[in-house]
Image (cartoon, rainbow, N blue to C red):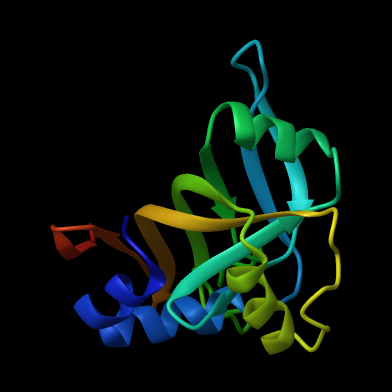
Length: 162
């Protein structure tokens, strides 16, 4: 399982940029797969806590059912991309994908909740997932050139630039 720690250890500067972009706004968008295989897009909050990227869901939510059935997901950080004309400030556009690993052990969930400012027994009926990260992408403009940095486990960081 590739954790956030692996990203951070493999490419520390990239991980810091991704985290800044990812945490620039509270709300993210997650894509999951419905029972029929079609995509479902939902709002979500996700946080890097310790070595892991965590996200959760209300009890019985469709996105949780999707992830329990098929753990593949794509997570889009705040969709803010600096224009080629440098008209808006942004730390980049972040996307992560991988597999959601449901965590039901309250001994693991409790410290994550405490780190978020909640009691260790909060949200007892909710679903909690750690990300098994398969890909991290950060898209930015440097001057007027779009630059895409791509990280995958075991492959390290690659820069795509026209």
